[in-house]
Length: 76
Image 1 (cartoon, rainbow, N blue to C red):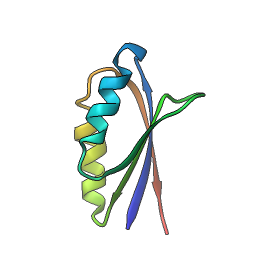
Image 2: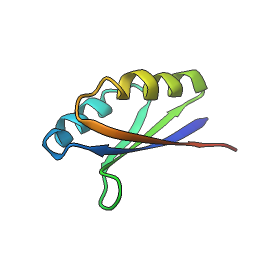
Image 3: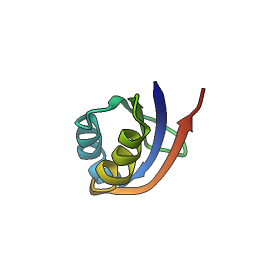
Image 4: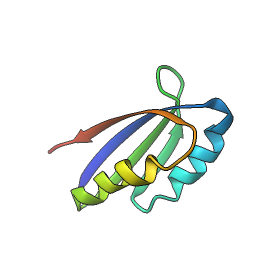
């Protein structure tokens, strides 16, 4: 199983909409509000690395209000 931790900096006015939209991504296993440098954590899991790439490059990038995306891909 491939796993990615995606850290988002978001516009606070859009934060709840971003969380709701991220939860609709089929391979999103968790979406959490965080405090500190990043505002939202999205955990993606899939057997197919292309699905993770698509979730980051397409699904997350089309959500309005995200200012920055930092992706951490876990390797075994």
